[in-house]
Length: 240
Image (cartoon, rainbow, N blue to C red; front, top):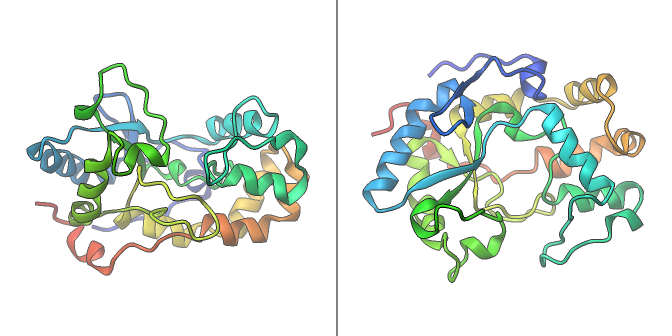
């Protein structure tokens, strides 16, 4: 599979030209379609109904989430799932509290269309609203079987979990899948300079603190991921 080097607008969520809309209304990268449907089919054969809770999010949508968290209108949680009084924090400490679970606008992997947050629709009622919290994916949670299955099978179709383990930046997110053949190229193309230019053109909440700490945020929360196994690249082009 040949992956084109994306332009800055795609990398920062300011373009949707690289996307295709699925039957459920979710948008993903057009080069991910075949692998995605192959993953769904394999899971279904095991009685797992993979549903998407979140896929592509553009810059403006991410900026709205960021604004709401900065102002305390949306809750911010720590690693123990306790709510943080984020409005009592300032500077780097406030940014770090928010970025544990929410990406900086312009720097979300969801901008690329290669990322999906998933749950198992076969284990919950149709009107269930997934919380996307670790407990749902642990041994006694409704999505524990999905979590285990993804751990053994997702790489066969080119997918990996960039936040499988906590590495001092983004918290562990067992629900977050990334399509490696495209995302790896995008990650390599996504530079600190591109992000800085995007933010200068599109100011966000806590802009001054973000720009002052951008190199550290880039290092700790953006490029600090769990690398996909080498077998992904070998297997991803022709999912069975």
